[in-house]
Image (cartoon, rainbow, N blue to C red):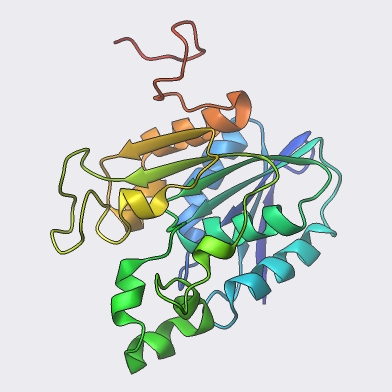
Length: 235
C-alpha cells in the first residue's frame, strides 16, 4: 500500500522521495519540507520495502508515476535502498520529463553488512526479498540495476579518513555503507559528509546540497562548484 504525501502541487518541478528499507516517509519528511520551501512539488511516498524485490518495487513505483499531474521536470531523491529503487526505475523506464537523481547513502555496489547477515533467519524475516538483493555476493543485484538515464549524484557518509564510523567495515564508511559501496560510475558529483547512515538525510547540509544539485547539476560543497556559484560558502 502506497502512502503518498503530496505537497505544493502547482509548481513546474517536482521531486519523488523514497525512503530506505524498513523505513517510512517520516525519514524523508524534513527533506520534503525543505524542498517545498524552495518551490518544488514533493511526493514523499511510502512503499512496501520489505515485501518485494528491488526490481518489483521499481516497477510498482513506475506505475504510480502515471497518476501524477504534469510537471516540467520530475526529480528523484532516495535514501539508502530508496536510491537503488529510483536508480533501477530510471535505468529501465524513465519518465519523459525526468530531471535529476540524488542517491543518499545508497549501496550501489551492494552491502557487505547485508552479505554477512544475509543467511540469518532474522535478517530474512525482517528485510525480505529486498534484503537479499542488497547483498554483495551472488544473491545481490545492486551492480546490475543499470545506470540512470539522467544526471545523477551521490551523497554518502564518512570521516574522510582511512577508517570510517564502523571499524568492522573496511575503509571509510557511514556505519553501514562504505564510501566504495556508494560509488557508481557516471555520477555527475560525489560528496562525503560526516554523518551516520540512518540520519544523513536529516541534516541541513545534506538538504542544501540535494537542492543545489537538483537546480544546478552539482553540489554546493563540491570542488566542482565555481567560485561564483550561487550560495557558494566562503573558503
